[in-house]
Length: 409
Image 1 (cartoon, rainbow, N blue to C red):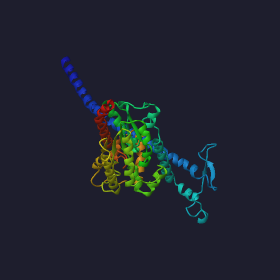
Image 2: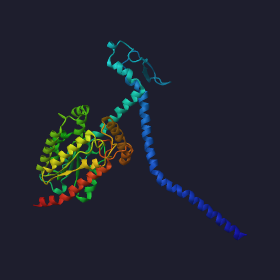
Image 3: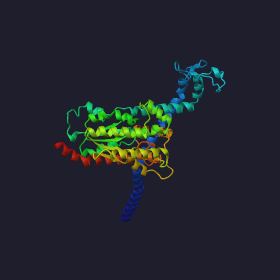
Image 4: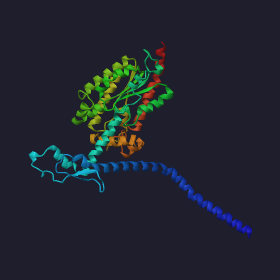
């Protein structure tokens, strides 16, 4: 009996352990699978909480923001039981019936329109998003040519080639704080391969005329290699009269460049950099929008031809990077989204939060938007950024030995 009872206990315990293993093992596997999803869900919850908070603030505060000019408003307590906090409440008057049209001012018309909470939420959301983008765009970085010169890293009259920096010149595609950071990828590639400092001379919202005025600062760093990626904002300025006006006012350009003036300015930039002793790589602007047959991409193709021709006329120390051709190959044959200024701005606002607030993977953002080469119809996606960094790293590492030989002579 004792033997049979012990056998029965062993069978029951082994059966119990088998059940425990069957229950625990799937949970362990599911935890490894679900953990990234939980992280993604938590980020989404944070984003939704931030949007709900912004909506609540706009709805609660919009009477203070729009009704302080109306003399018919009465001041009432904002919340029950509050002693000093009050808000003006204005009688609702249908649009066009408050007073004769000749006596109506633009403020009164806007005031009645803006009393709609939905209008207030959308309007203030655009304002807050624009301020966030502006803060990111004008943030001062420590890897710029100006910072390099302030630190005195290149004070000797003739700096050794091993410490001469690689400088990447351009606009927001090069700055990388609103898109994939290909200059950061390049810095990692060159850490072991060439042991050269990499400076980021990209400035957001600049056209080729702006870049031309900054070349002397680049030359003062005595670079060994310089990449020039500029022209996307010139293409955007040509896309519509409104965007051209924006670049004239905020970009401080005297005129919207044409294909002829772009080639002239690019040739001048190339000649000044080559005269300073640097090796130069001219990069064609990538696609603008993801519709292969759009007018914007046909113009971008013409710009790429100009960049290729300008590089070929620069001699053996000047090379061409076919970024347009690479990004164009990533576009769908049909059904790609054409460039649209409003969609680009809305996606850029969300992208700013995705990068700097939520820290999302840019590949996920690109996949959600069903884009092939860009993140927002303009800025580079991760694959295009990695390809550009790899081209630049190969350009630097294959020529650094020749530069060392020339420096020793």
